[in-house]
Amino acid sequence: MKAIALSIFSFLLLGLATGPSAMAAVDRINVTSVPYNAVPDDGIDDTAAINAAISAGKSIYFPAGTYDFTGQMVLPANSSYRLYGEGPGVSTIRFTGPSAGINAPNMGLNTLNVDNLTLWAKTMNCGTAISASFNEFGANTKFRTATIVNVQITGSERSGGSGGYWTNGIYLYRAQNSVIDKVHIWGNIRPAAGSEADASLTGIVWESSNTYATTGLQLSDLEITFVNTALRTNGWVEGLYLNRFEFVQCGQHGVPAVDLNSFDSVNRKPTFHLVNGHVDLIQNGIRLTNLRGIRISKVLLLHNGGAERNGSMVIFNNCFDAMVSQCTFLGGTHDAVFNVPLTDETGILLDNADSVQVTGNWFAHMTTPTGAAIAIQPTSSVVRITNNIFTTMFGGGVNHRYDDQNPDPNDPYFRGDN
Image (cartoon, rainbow, N blue to C red; front, side, top):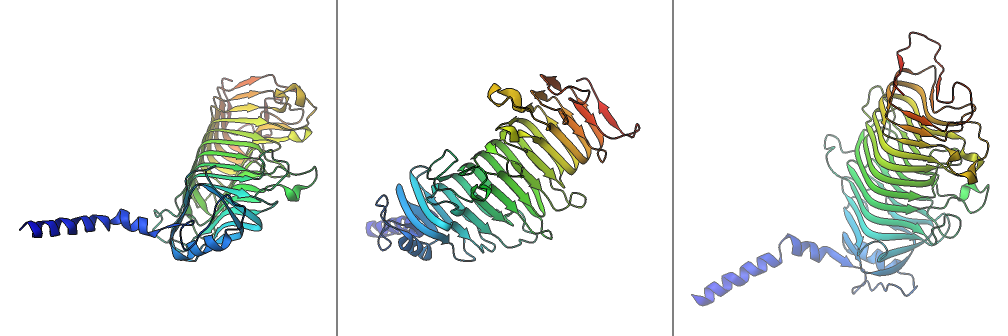
């Protein structure tokens, strides 16, 4: 009987060893193990070893160290993948471009996870650090597609003026219910004056076609520095929620620091919320187009840079049902070093916007000879402005705080106790 009991106990132990956690461990491919044999920190190209590991499994582990990879790390189609390490700054993949980065061109109905890694651009205009495209999910819109957590996307130096840098940070196409959390992206503002083509273009892009609703993007704890546009959306996208973010030295070369656009604001429901953040912009700040259900709250918008600081901090274009509250708008004259004549520095520009509330904000150091802290174009209506504070306004004239260009006296516009 004792022998039978021992056999049963041994069988149970074997069952536990081959349970879900053990099976996951078996699938974990360590790129430094035999037969892959990638060697970190030796400066020798590890492309072949890493590609072999990707072909062998779906969960690819990078132990501590720096790995060198040339070109795109292409993930096979219609498969779920996880690429992960010991943490940003600990496990690093150093890419050599020009067309480099992690590329999942056809994820199908599967998932992509990238976590605890540094993706380092060794060359200029290195490519897109993480790019993934998914199929249309039909009715199954609650399925999560991409999860990118605790990742650094950086160049060979972080001053934003030279060295290797990524052209783009993260690009997601038809990525339902994705999560981007604890991500830091360093770009390149431009190597020299006038060389716009050598600037990092975007930090994060969330995109869909105009015929398929991609819903749900959760973004939190982001820091994006030295890119033209830190965050951009395109196509039929709905439901973006951004919380705790720092976008520094962005918004130049004719594009805003944040460019949020959906295909159709009338027949769709593209709700976008931005809360608890800081946008240090050079020219234009946050531009919203074809959106509804917009909430911008507890955001500091700061004009920075030289004479090119002319621009608008928040722009509503064809938007409905929006609220801006508890935000701070600091104009270009906040620092004596940059106290140069400006011609058009606007806090909030309402262009074809309807049902908008601007309440409880602080506008300071705005230089507005022809601009205004709040400018309302004739195409906008139903605007309520209450309980705001305006201090140290420059430019003179009666329109340095408000510029209501709608001549219709019956327009439902209310300027309250400011």
